[in-house]
Image: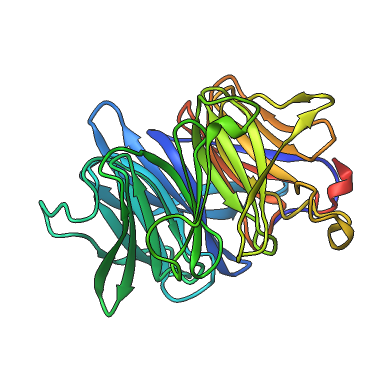
Length: 364
């Protein structure tokens, strides 16, 4: 639905509830596009996962308008703490969500109708996964394996097989370490982050704990702040971190898997490191100019959203490209995997925004 050129177009869709997170569901056709949203009603205390359809509304002789229409919802007994969707078009589509009560749920969505067909949830009262809130989850592309981390220091792998959930505990720090972010790096590797800039790289082929660890004091002596978001580049072992509280956006690269030393670099605006209270960070696949000739040491372009109401693209050595400047926090965003010019984000003031960028990144 994004245009091939021209200016940035922003659509805002007011909601009746707070929108904590949003994710694109992978589209099986250009005509069936859906957004999953984690919502919370502060008045009633109720929470839910909602599926919305992005549709063109006929307006007579005037140009057609976009609207975001509710298709289905699933009620949660606790507020949703993290949300991920499979990124491979399949039938059904898989949505993984976690709660502040410590439970993990899988929902299966019809890719054409946008309706929730079934769910997999733990038995009521069963606390085998986490003791306390689950901070973050991430799904493998096909949606059949999920990694979860929590404030309790547990790292878990949960697989979906024949209508049941199978669980394996990878690590238990017994509360001595608190994990706040996680992201798959390959079918067997993933990265976690936590307090004080902590970053860990895990390899399931090498049990016993993380194979590489980066402490906060490695970042120019700074040891405060929370790693609130992680992304791993799909074709390079590059990791980007969104740090909340102290607000520094950092990039790291991993060497060969046999010796995964972590190197650190920071994005900068001119000569100063970028400082934003970052909620989420993702590599921006739309802006990959000269990718094949880009040195492996260069940090690739990323998109961030912040507590300060900013949605922006960062490219090493260049000024940030500001896409949104809101009077409220931008809680979360997601770049469409098939149409990276389209970005959906959740705004603190009960709204969902859709940004449609020119397909030609040089237009920014």
